[in-house]
Image (tube, rainbow, N blue to C red; front, top):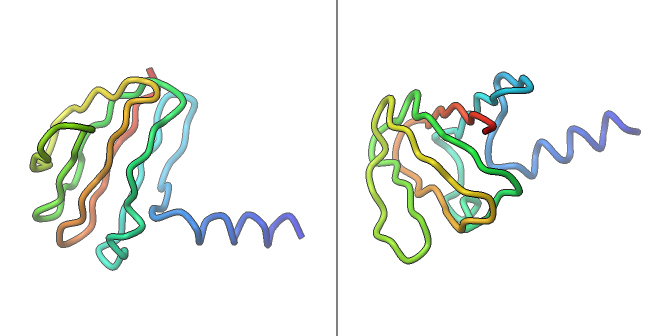
Length: 100
């Protein structure tokens, strides 16, 4: 039963975690994701996000700011409870989330 719950929760997330440690998470957003799944949200901890594989046309946006293009090796510092979102482009997006 617990295994089924884990599978269902993974299906709800708009991403797949490729590697998880105490210090970072490598996360992939698939090219076939529905853009509506990439909602505005806040996280419960500070984090620094490194863009590993940006696909084409993927963007990042903080609340009350214009979106900007994601490029390889770009670092984004996101403070706890700061509103932000990712905007879908083409291809997959792979990021490394460093837990500060």
